[in-house]
Amino acid sequence: MVKNSKKITSPVLAGLTGLERDTMMAQLLASDILLKRINELINKEIEGLGNITPEAFDTPSWAYKQAYELGMKRGLQRLKEITKVNGL
Image (cartoon, rainbow, N blue to C red; front, top):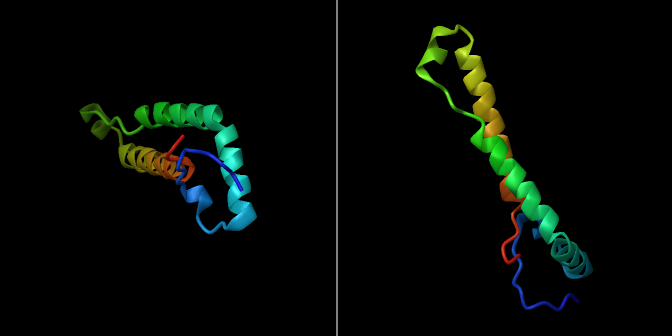
C-alpha cells in the first residue's frame, strides 16, 4: 500500500483497485516533474490554436482550418483532463 500524505485523484486511477491502484499511485508520485512538463507543453499548444482573425474569412478554406484547430484544441484539452493528477 502506498503511504503518502497527499490525496491523489486522477481519471487515470478510475477503475483501478488494490495493488493496481497502489502501483499506479506510486508511478504518478514518481512522475510528478514529467506530468507537469507535459501539462506545460499541452498548454502552449492550446494557446497557439484557435486564433481566427477577420482576414481568415477572406479565404475559402477558413472553415476547414477553424474546424481542424478547434478539434485539435478539444483533443489537447481532453488529454489534459485525462493526465491531470490532483494532489501532485
